[in-house]
Amino acid sequence: MSPVKKITRHTIKSNETPAFLFLGIVSSEPDYRLSVMLNRHLGIDLRKGPQEVSAGTGSETHSFSVFTTTSPALSLISNRSVGITLLKKLKNIDFLLLINGVIDRKQAESLTASVRNIPEVTAVFLFDSRDFSDRNIALLVQ
Image (cartoon, rainbow, N blue to C red; front, top):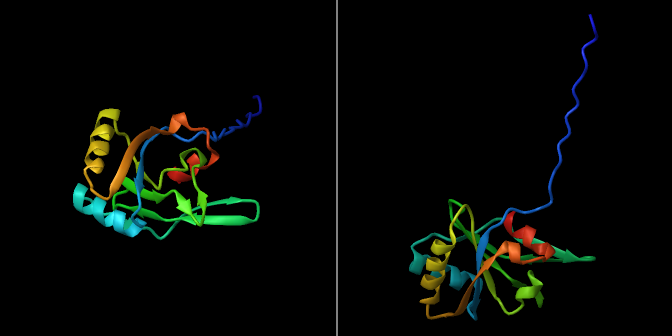
């Protein structure tokens, strides 16, 4: 009889984040007021999460507030923290509304149109994560 050969398995982890859609919202309102407006207008329940998105350069670390629904379908993430922006290419965007899960572009455009009807919201843009090469984009889906 021949000796039993041991099978070695290797797992390769990819640094690529899955593709997702998100809205860029421009509003002069603070994050907690915008979350209340979105709750009322969309009929959702955004609440401040226990964790924040942390990003840092060198020795400085900045935290960005996160509001999520109980079933994590939507997340409102602040794009600004003490003069620093989370996504550099979107420096004029105040908030990011992350759409978790699989959603098609038509539903996302419908959500965009609905958010535009909030009077305190100046502008809303629909973005695809595949269009950004920013290293902080991966922090949004953690």
